[in-house]
Length: 228
Image (cartoon, rainbow, N blue to C red; front, side):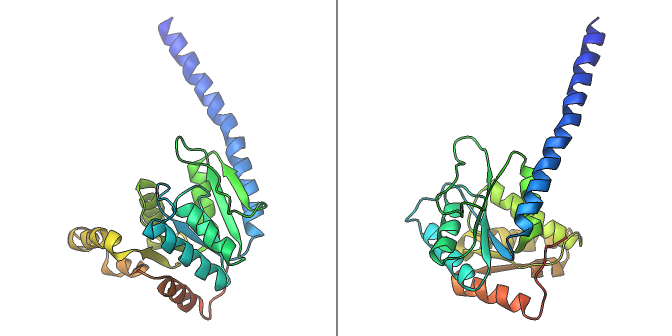
């Protein structure tokens, strides 16, 4: 009897999983339709916990403003902290300001600087991450936590394995990022787990001018298009 009940519960889970496919499909379809109409954008990542007035918050505003002035839209995760700063900078420059929102406990809520017609809501992290990767012409990575590292290393992995086109990956804040990159060089590279050329995918900078310079130089003579 217990075995039969166990199997019944397992079958119910499988049925629920099957129906979830339609919800996942719906998020993909809606995201693709909306994002494909927006045009070339650069994604800005970073901590949701940074407050206005923090040096990195203020720098993220400047970075986003410069990116928008250079003709690119700005995509963020839509929440507070660095995400808010990114949308704020784009808004100040009169540029496209996109927010890919996801419901998270304690920290996620829409920030007020997202264009009203460019705020997208997601239930699934993996669908949201596809939108970032597919429709970004570059990743600008400010100091952040595990989520920021997740986005960073996924992009590096996809480029490294030729699953998407190469695009600029720019780490902003040498004081914050240098220790990580030193570890990558001294430990991962030394152990032979990556190739030296993989490190060429990453640039570390400290100013908004450097960010825009790297992006503009990369796309000089290239066609801007979705990444896969």
